[in-house]
Length: 392
Ligand code: FEO
Image (cartoon, rainbow, N blue to C red; front, side):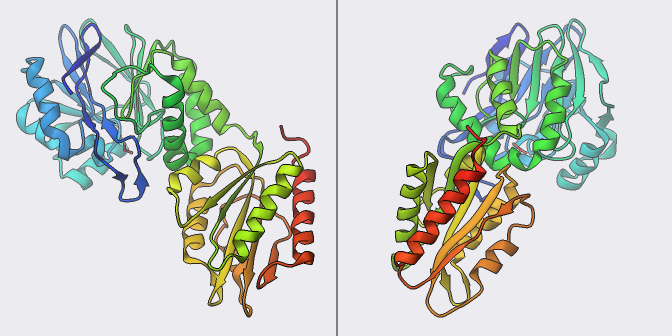
């Protein structure tokens, strides 16, 4: 993708990765992604904000050539993760006078990850200002969105906030700016769910920090650029709030139909009580969809058969994801079946230590569910109805 002007003297020079299917060899990317880098040409100095994944460095270099950039004074490293920092060594090779502008934590990480020499860095503090001549940039430390060294860059004259991973989306598009907010909302929610959700408390602080700024444009390091900053900031405010929705997410696996029958009955029991139920068959789904579903649901009910003495391995995987993502879920329960015994419930419970939840009475049945088992599922649905009574 060629370089594109955001405002006079400010360009998007990064790369689009249409075909990437997985991030960190873990996160599915149904919409591809982009590695956004931005060039700011001041009257005195030129700054490059971040680089791109090394696999795409040719695209970044072509864009700099297209803009006839013969000098870069500052390479601002917002974040040490290699999808943004990985091409810094190449840029330093092409522009040997450039200095890498970092906060102290990022400096040590870049020295560790990319073996950049100490004399290549300029270290700045939180709130520090750097003049490019007619353009002034300010650094805003934003730790834990999602690494400890993340920082944002504010271009004062143009009121552009470069937010690095924060507020981004894995969304490949040839359109620089968001045009279809509904489509972007889904991609941004997936990105929040998979990457940012464990850091809700840090995000709250950082959202407050940036609310002091006058912002016309938000330019993240992944996905499209926002001309309507309120759209993404308000979405984040909802996701990070303590408010949950009257929903029950049910990740489940069934080997011989017993757990599936319980899930089917339970979904209807919840619907009869006015509660939205979202079952996810873990053998067929993209785990990102489960991550999105748990962003705002009040309750998660895990459904698992007993394999040998414990939960199905797909449930173990989903439980470890739930525990790592730390959703704001308030209530958890477990349903499922067994053939001759085991400790499935204890094991699933033990896999969720990070969740601050109330555990509702599990429903575990021997073999195929019978009349009294369906009654137990009704009781669990009644209990959830009571617990959700103040939730919209
Ligand atoms: Fe897009 Fe944390 O790197």
